[in-house]
Length: 407
Image 1: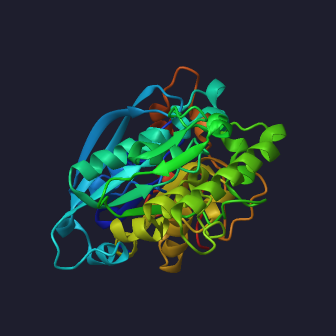
Image 2 (image 1 turned 30 degrees about the vertical axis):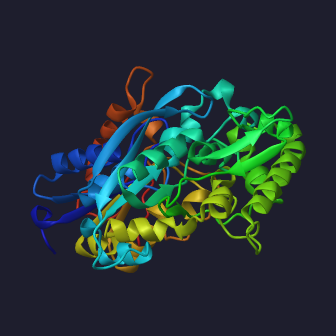
């Protein structure tokens, strides 16, 4: 057996919602591991599911640049958004192929995450209500990236706080809706849709191709659609579900008629992603949907990094049913166990009764146990990781904040 001084640990964390970014979680666990086993080779690999940090993580991983800018937030106030730019020649061949970028071409890829402009985290809890929110800021980021020559633009659709069919985003790109008196309606949030008399879409000529990265497979409408499944998570009252769905469906049909397209765009898996922005951008901007988890895995070269590691440490704020949908930490764990790696999952909590398709799972040392009221989340997480240092010792088996270990 190799000694701890020659061990190689892959540390790949997603964000801990409302507490730690993916980068912070990786750094804290890396520091704790090195404190216990100084000779360990540490490979920090922040993860993203297409939500918060999508543009930042992918731009930094590939040597691109990140550009912050003020945009219109989901409730109309100004927020700090960001977009990334990555020269094509810095992209891995698999990524270029997946995005349809020519092997011998020269250009720049744009990166936008909806969460930074129109995310749920951008909406104060007392204002979370899809009736009055707009995705306009996401469109402003797309315009900014296009203005810097980006083509295509990759949009991460995770973490959204809006359910407006992407109309706000499209309004920033040129969509115009008018009331019966001919006045433009802005913002065009759902609570104004009943006033719409006419709609026209005047997107800029030769606007860059848009690729929407998402893993959601929901159709646009119905019991598995954007409103019924995700509306309550965004603050929609259960008593408003049917009324909102009716208005949502009527506006979707209006956009589809405006597009002049043929086919069942309503039932396409992913059309219901991010409050229907997948649908809106497909029918009026010609956007394409791409599977986010596979793209991120290839972008970060995760298969090879797992193969090179002796042990893998991963996790997120809560390990629940959504963690098992074949993406993020769960997919990484499954692959690592297939390769016989030692795996440690750190989670603030594990959903009670969750049937995990691995050998063992325990929340041995929950984050909250190391988080007194005055202790910041970062300090608590670092203390918790350090306390479990004996369990993540490369020469030992099992353990961690909810350890999954192949027996």
